[in-house]
Length: 371
Image: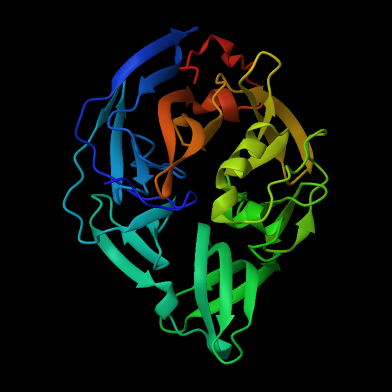
């Protein structure tokens, strides 16, 4: 039976076959490896490192499972996932913080916290949480931990008036649940709103304990959301927001093609004191040029840019304490009543090559597959 799922959903899976390393480059010591992911996720939008950066967790949205890979030496091998107390429907975004690993399962907006062995610690169905002022969460996407709560792209509904609010909100659970409106966004059915609720990402990141967000519109930029709001001036020149059209199922393929033909920011990440902006632009010799811009938000300064060694149509970047993973993905095509996107090779780059601002980084010798 063909998989039926909307293109922006993600999930989780179980690994069983060996993952074969297909290339290793060495320059004064090994700094990058490229592997053919087996088993491959059917649909991949998020990922996270656990256990001090030695294990990679990839949610597979279509198959409703977590794929778990062990990274050691010259190998990347799958690990069997223990029988989970929590089952997933369409696991999506995933965050690893001091609270452990937390997975967002759609379409119920259920936060599932897992222990180090991936056993259930706790879970909360956000749609069922009674928030003050008669507010209810209808949608919660692409979240990260923030202090004593979680912050994410949110659609709130007032139970009395049925009015909806689209934006970025912080959710606190426990005996006295709270939902705090942090930043208002356009409706998810609008041109600008479609960026946040349907495409690419992630758009939220932490650096030096503060929370930042990537915003689109006429002039893409980065803003600090917490603990106090403020707009950064640091942003690379020449990158704009592509014209995607309204957020509908019918324009899914055309929207992804618009991304592929665009010179645009794509995602925002945080590690330590730096932010990292992922941007894309078409190459003259076909394919995509992918650039990571390192930004010091405290000084509001661009530090450097790093060209990633891939020409894939789409990529998933997963920062980690030991290595950054770059997973190559193909274009989105309609199949039956759903959509499919090929997941290709995974490239692992030593973290210091990306994060150390004094490192003379040339990743051109790293070889990934070219899709």
